[in-house]
Image (cartoon, rainbow, N blue to C red):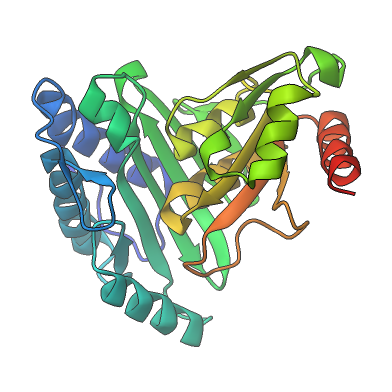
Length: 277
């Protein structure tokens, strides 16, 4: 597939096509033999993670050479340097933030729920985001102020005229405070709970109305940057457990409390406040 022509400002169609094509070439052929191994921090990495990061770094630089890339598979020192440079130049070109394969443990185990997540962060804001669900061939994308899309079609705001007690929640229990995890397990306010193992797709599935609620205790910038924009542009709502905006233009781990529907979000947030009191 030919690469789009270079432009000064990234365009969502060109970026989405580039990420989707890279995923089909670098991730899909490696799915039968993921060659997974553990990194020093105890998380998984595969040849597909590295191949995607190298390819996208090369192709994005060819189109937008003025925008550096921060990837999950870089060293912590490289990541910190890039974030410091971006924060010091709020009117500069910004920064690509990439998770080359979100859901690596799923990929390594043969569970078909994973894909790349790419965001353009500029001026302490997420300007553009793309998440590809590789095995479903679904490309979620958004540009700040211009709405969200799924495979090039507008993603309507989720509307859920059902009570909180009948909702489906996506909850990652492992990273929650222990007391909260116990309360949710023993006195859940929702009907049922799932966890699919990909933070980026968690956000997108809330945006698409597949989950009504979402809760995660600790996720990295490359995990949530693109997905949080997609949810916001689809009309969804989010905050941290502390009541702050999830995105804070840093490498700090962030919690996320989300819902696609405004009324459900208020009920979900109110339950958290009441239960924490």
